[in-house]
Amino acid sequence: MNKSLNGKKIAVLGIGVSNMSALRYLMRHDLKALTVFDSRQKPPRMSEIPSGIDVRLGEFSSKVLSGYDMLVLGPGISVYTPEVEEAARHGAEIVGDVELFAREARAPVIGITGSNGKSTVTTLTALMARKDGINAVMGANIGVPVFDALRDDAELYVLELSSFELETTSSLKLKAGTILNVSEDHLDRYHGSIEEYAAAKQRIYLNCEKAVVNRADPRTLPKNGLTPFASFGTDSQSYGIIKDPDGRVWLGVDGKALYDTSRMHIYGAHNHQNALACMALCDAAGISRKAQFAALDDFSGLPHRCQLVAVIDGVSYYNDSKATNVASAQAAIEGLAGAHPQGILLLAGGLGKGQDFSPLCRYIGKEVTDVYCFGRDAAKILALDSKRCHSVMNMRQALNEARAKAKRGQAVLLSPACASFDQFRGFEERGEVFVSMVRRLEESGGQNG
Image: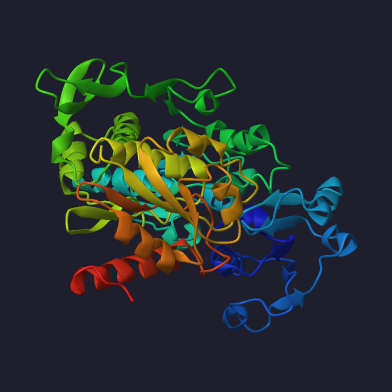
């Protein structure tokens, strides 16, 4: 119990999953006042709010919010919201559920952020810890609110942290932390500035004992110049990649080959980098190498992340619906290109979130033979190549046209490079629909009506 909260007037902004969990935590304290605000007139989860809680719907008022000691923001509410900034100027403390969690957690914490790969690295790191007999608990952006993850018997917390969560976090102490990569994403929230977005992610290093950085991405390096760090990358330095004379690819440390990647059940060169990041984090947390390799042997990946759905008539179908930005689609293309030198047929499109799609040009006509474009921002991808980018109405038509053109040895890859909310409830639903359509193709001998 955080006694420093007692006697305070607290406003919870946003009725979402994480704030519902935070609300249950706050109700255990002796507060002067506890009010829930939501700008929507009919927000979901209203029925879950306990009776007796003051709930106010509609636009926030700067004057009203400025009368609170603390604002607890849901991840969907930016610290740059004018009413929030005004309350801060009047002395209100601005926090999120992760910051409140940081003041309660007693077990060591590993924190993971980055534009891409967070969920895979979080899940695999937790599995490595469990293989070592450690009661590791996952939480935060991976789908388990931190206050649902808070346990007396936890021996290690492994948290996936978004830039939105890090905006309101300042006192989270980490045994090890990483920014896996930084690429254009959520720029609509950060005034179109990738540097502002990167600065939000840099907050993960505020109280971090050991950082793990990406050698290929200088934005992942601690800017304070004080945090010690290890690095991972595609060369043989530190945590790196080693190729032996027989052509096998190994995960290595300081030039020593340690683990043959042919033992892994997750696909793509980008997953070799994810595995190296996990190894570095686990080394920093004292998790044994034996346990790390046991987890790598067992881990089959997460749904919607370069998931091999089926091989039909020699054509491989991959579900990478989680690729909601350009860099993630690039990683999937690069990761699968070696296994499919005959080419990849890419299914892409949706809500572009203000991204620049031009980095995809380097693959079109090379690793990618054709692109089938659908969704609200399809025209922006179509503009990349008038001959190889094809306009379709939806993902079903994209799959059918790709299926008709694909040749043995090629891959059909759903890696949209966009958010899904124009046509789906989320990337999960988009991926599930894709998997279902591929399964029907498989069952019908390649015909998807």
